[in-house]
Length: 153
Ligand code: FES
Image 1 (cartoon, rainbow, N blue to C red):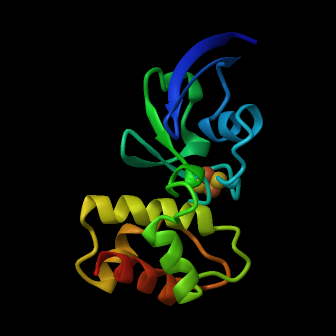
Image 2: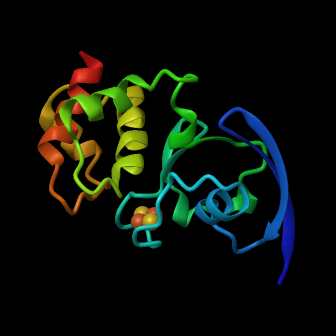
């Protein structure tokens, strides 16, 4: 199958790779770069478990073709902490106990960071609306919203 070379920055590190043109960003991260924090829930854009930031924007990495990301800056859950210091939203998820099984958590946190950066945090309802692409089957939404609110405050 046709393949292409792509150079992009992932969590601050420049990477160049040749991949099958059909490779999703999610598979690039998980299978080529060993960054398995981003989860494959539905692989169809419906759950948000694969959410990463591309040039600061939230995207479903399962729906994003890797070869289209020449010179893009990608941030995954692995790139949020500052050394041993968790990102404030990661800490808030722990403090608020905002997960049960944890499978959706990386996507929830990255999406929450995007939501905060976009300024969609005026009320619990607004947070819920702007994070509605991130599904939690354990139903931890109240605590997830609280963690985002606490991080903004
Ligand atoms: Fe990408 Fe579900 S795995 S949205």
